[in-house]
Amino acid sequence: MLALLIGFASVFSAVLAWRASLASIDASHHESLAVQEAARSNQLERLIEGTVAQDERFVVVFQEHSRAARELSAQAAALRESNPESADILDLEAQAHLALARAMQPFFLGAGGIELGDGGTVGYDREFVIQSLRDADAELDELSLQRSSELAQRADVRMLNLIGIEAIIIAALFFLTIAQVSRAQLRVRQVFVGIGGVLVLLGTLSFVVVEVLA
Image (cartoon, rainbow, N blue to C red):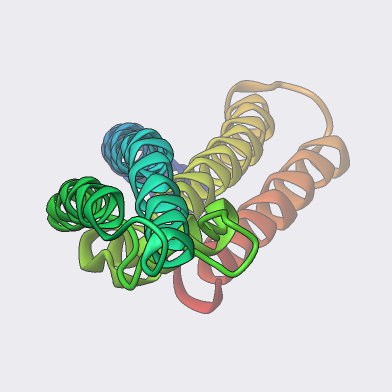
């Protein structure tokens, strides 16, 4: 019985070391994936912010030309009856500015439907555009669903649990070996065997919990 316990504990200890090494490999793999995913996610976020920053620069130019076109058209309308020639010149200038403003519209990458408001300004909601671009980015959405960090943490916990169980089995081997080589009284040896057996049982149940039920 004692030799059987020692043999089982020895083999079990080797299995635990093997399983702990596999858990460590899994943890390293998932941690590497998590770092790559975080880096790619940050890169996509920077691209979105760069797109919005470019839009905002174009908004300023679009707003200047649109406002100039509106003001020139208003001046032309005021001079239409009293000075038609000047009104025509102002109309041409207004159309030129309007053409420049329209030429800017294809360059807006983050938002569409850019136009000059009644107050003479262009409405551009930065946070709304950023969120819209995030929602439209399929890769960013996929990255947000990845669980690499969680899987790495779970693998780390499993590895630590297996190492703890291995320590229990090593302690069991210690008591069982003492019981085998000791020349103490039978009762003392039985106590060591009992302690070793309990530790083996505890380690086995813990292994089942960690590997099967967890």
